Length: 63
Ligand code: SF4
Image (cartoon, rainbow, N blue to C red; front, side):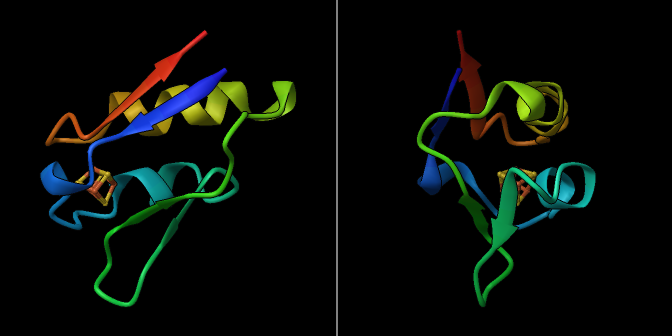
């Protein structure tokens, strides 16, 4: 699984890293940092949850 992150759409709500801190992190402004280029299988559920809960649709997962 890979994560597509549209940085220009991210406004820093923090939903992604609050729900899935092992997959997503925050920069100094509270914007998302994706920790993995390829998500380890054991973290795919977290990756999906974080992406699905981004209010700006800045995140998407691809199998
Ligand atoms: S939930 Fe979406 S808008 Fe909020 S920090 Fe994460 S990627 Fe950015």
